[in-house]
Length: 129
Image 1: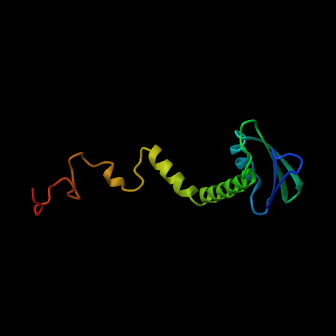
Image 2 (image 1 turned 30 degrees about the vertical axis):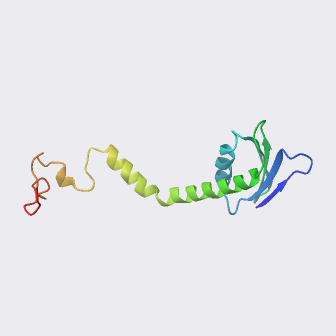
Image 3 (image 1 turned 60 degrees about the horizontal axis):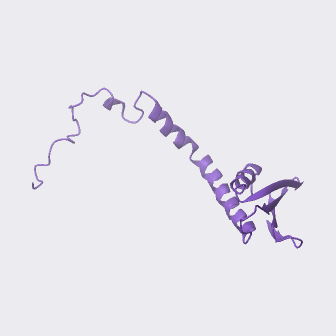
């Protein structure tokens, strides 16, 4: 990934992104996060490289913009990776929350409200009051 500032104007910075490291969707999501501060133009240079042009909007400082972009790119790539790794677990939690069936301890679904097989509601005889 290369970063450079345009010599002609300090209001534009360029970042070159290798799509073998950062998928296109990650670059798009990162670019979206920067649209509030700058105008973002993405262009493929070849099959494996995207040129990102960051042009500042009025009243926004340009210092370290390319560095911030690359940090957000790394952050977004990690989010994508963790999302894939935890997808099955998140789907199980959502299915459990939305279902009428208890997936973890089904015997508790049909229990009477005051039936306490684990003796949870009975006070501890050794506890001091």
